[in-house]
Image 1 (cartoon, rainbow, N blue to C red):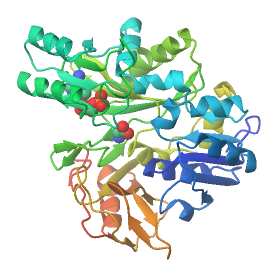
Image 2 (cartoon, rainbow, N blue to C red):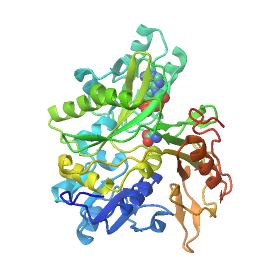
Image 3 (cartoon, rainbow, N blue to C red):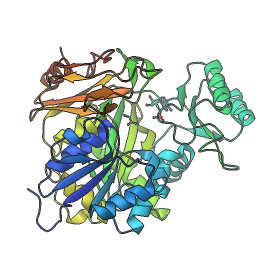
Length: 442
Ligand code: AMP
Ligand code: GLY
């Protein structure tokens, strides 16, 4: 049960519109002592979550969010996506006295600038692939020419997962560079990386190995680690086809056992938080490390300044009743006074139902029929959905729903998740049948 010496925030505002934010709202509303959770702008499922209400204020509307915090006497703000964090929303809310879980614009550079994050890792000896920064097309092509091998090409700045090309050939890498400088690849030179003299692209050595996601909840100085999760980024079964935001996940990922996770804490997470502190950054939020487990050990592929989606939906059902207290303590910089976070020992499985066409041109506006009844072991989180004026739920985005289930073993957890998914219908529903293939025996 929650420790009485560590306060619980009674009134919480969750900012964001995805499955991640619905899962956060659901988990926070379950925490004892939490009286009300508002999700804004939310989606078609936000107001149906027990204990949650929906507002219509957009993530980018700082003035509107400030007013909501005042009017609703919000005690904790949890910011889901990276864009408002990079825009300084958490700084502004903290200035006004609202405890906020999410880094300021300075700390959000961990995700918002690949070059900045790479430099931080290099200076602190954090394992990551070798890289070159380039701020012109000519310079990038010259680096590629000199290396004479296919390099990974990354646009600097927030690119919503679409700014990376893992080239198989030098020609493919060259084409990716040309595309970025033509302004079509993620955030090109005319957006985040465009300040005079700042690099707008990063070239990287390619590394090989399975990928896992690790999440550290930080209070500026201390951290609590969540179980590891494995995402499925590709649209197609067998991990083929285009990159997506994530088509499913499972946790905990046995690829990284307790000892491996401890190694990641010592080699990656603690040094990252220390490097942030050394730059004067009081980082209060999630450090999400996307790791590749290479034969030489873990290597950081990327940092994000927020929870992963769909990893968040997958993980929160495994977390105990202290969750709201822990996020509050992170926001207040006193994690040392928070109770330990209970982690339930089971397995969690998440399958995403996407719209036809995702991650390209997609169908929208189809009615969703669901007979799925959530249980203690089965959750349905809405992502790209909205309610029309008659209160009907319609598809409105690429990743439409996340079905999540828990059990003592992965086979049962995935069976429950897929059985849950079979009770949901919309025209063009698209999902992978092989999520968790790494841990399933049937
Ligand atoms: P990022 O947006 O940096 O997470 O990259 C997206 C995906 O590209 C990652 O999940 C990896 O699968 C792949 N990737 C990124 N960097 C590398 C690298 N240096 N070597 C191999 N694959 C990479
Ligand atoms: N699931 C990957 C991400 O949230 O970036």
